[in-house]
Image 1 (cartoon, helix red, strand yellow):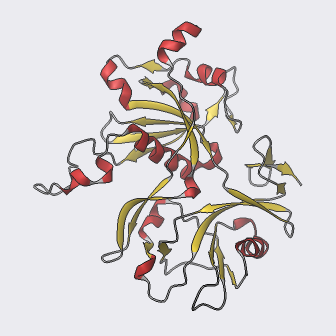
Image 2 (cartoon, rainbow, N blue to C red; image 1 turned 90 degrees about the vertical axis):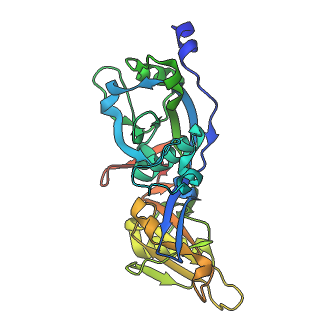
Image 3 (tube, rainbow, N blue to C red; image 1 turned 60 degrees about the vertical axis):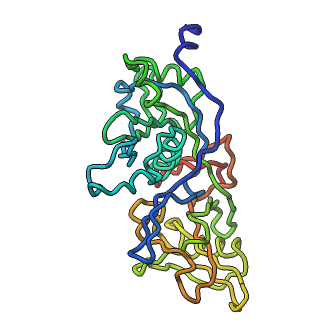
Length: 316
């Protein structure tokens, strides 16, 4: 079995994906229309296998999503005679690019549940499949929040079907992923840990006119802002905006709320910061509130019975 596996499994060492969110922006002149780096959806990625379908793992599927990959073909909705689509970033055939996009989608949609992804660049439209690791042994098909070992992944692949045509196999790739936790901060006032990561670089500003600000202050530091937001907003906390003191601005700005701005619809809400007159430079952070958990340990998990969620760390 080991020798057979060597001819099929081409497991590569892990690499940091290039975490991306597609940001459309607002109507001209505030359009963006590009992939923008986002630490909020970062993950480690390790290649497992090429050319296998996993129809037998329906119990593991978290979701399947369209990849807007042109693959050298003009999209049907693109105006005839206009060749600008050829210069679109979505026209790349780089599988590493699409693996990073798929990993970002799976982290954004499913967070720590996502353990395995597959990019299918053969189908039209192309697809990104997100899987949880579920044990194939016995009747235990519960999601595991512990990263599967190589042996466990081999068992998970048991029953997968290899494509007949060798030339097609390179366009159907399966990877293991490990969502990154981001920075962590233990807030003594609520005995909980806040994981946070930059949503977008400060070159972009969130122009959501319907944004409900649950808390605001002039906290002096980002750490103070997170502490105050955790106490005042509570477990529903999803984002923090922090703007430090800067020339022309006498006080810092701390803002917090309960909306997840990594979701795809939020891509319509961003504008280039230099298009906003008189704006104090600020950064938005995606936040994950882990109640009654200390630290960001990768070696232990805490289950919250009230929310049925897992968090990395130790119970308080």
